[in-house]
Amino acid sequence: MHPFLRNLRALGLYLAVWGAIALVLAALAWRIREGLPFTHALLVVGPPTMAYGLVCLSALWVARSCPVGGTSPATLARTLFGAALQASAWWVGIAAPWTVLMKRFGALDVERIELFIGYGALFVLGVPLYALSLGLHYLMLAFEASREAERRALESQVAQREAEVRALRAQLNPHFLFNSLNSINALVGSDPEGARRMCASLGDFLRTTLALGARDAVTVAEELALVERYLAIERVRFGVRLQVERRLEPATESCLVPPLLLQPLVENAVKHGVADRLEGGTVTISSWTRDGRLLLEVENEVDESGGGRPGTRLGLENVRRRLDALAGREARLDARRENGRFRVTVTLPMHRQEDAHAGP
Image (tube, rainbow, N blue to C red; front, side, top):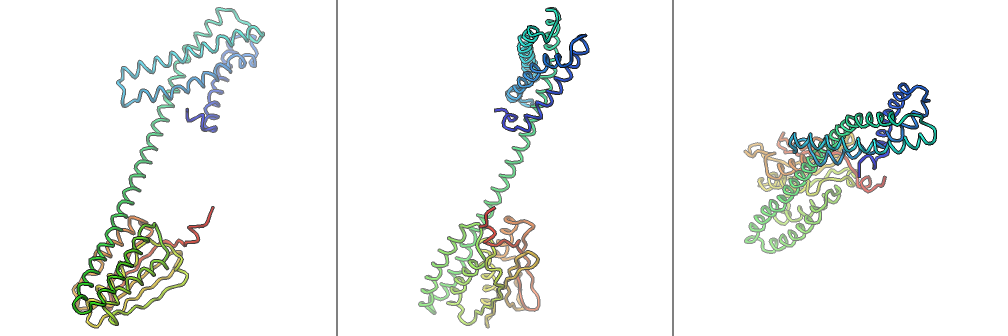
């Protein structure tokens, strides 16, 4: 079906153009034929002209069958000129019985020779008018092709980002599993019971990560519950050396965040702020809102004499790349080390669970 027939506004505009052409032709007939009232001229010329406007809609299929870039110039010229001649013949074929009918009803008083001259004029005029319609439809097809290319490019970008997010998310479990297996290996000789408890907790944790990781977004409360499962695993290994402090704004618990966002940050804090220190350390987890933004922060103590380079670890880089892929400039990760502490702050646009579920 022609796009104009599905869009009443476009069809109305198209018919208005042909209505203007009919008025011009009626005015010419009125000026040329003395004694012919303008209303009679419009009655004679108008309906066949409007019908020819509908015939010119066939230019869409002609343009589709002969794309400019994929058809030789000779074939293109031959096809378009032939289509224009056929369309003009249709115009004459529509006009001939109509003028005879108008002559019979007294709206037109002309000789037969004058009718034939008028038919010839319509046939000649029909060719450039059909050519204009062809040009219009070629422009329309070019516009549609451009929009389709933009749509495919956008879909490709979205698919690429989704694939990148899935790949980055898939790295989280192997990365954590590697560290956890090292921890279990360290406990097997000195604390077999602790190693068994850690294996059980690890299985529970991985089941939860699979459930949350399959979702597009989770609440801060769900993410913190996952972090607690992770910390329960690490407490088997570190005991009292691992201390956790929470500074959580209650209003942030219903905010939505990408799944498995905090866990790698807390894991990084435990690895570099607790495991690397003989006396252990405290991991501080904070959340608050400011100016319509959600801020999540993980902080740990570090040795000033340490030679590590915070902010370049796999976990941090993974989170940073996920944020770039998911939210672009709307989200960011800042990592800094100062005064014996290492602090990672994630800033996100604030979306609440109830807002996501609210209907229009």
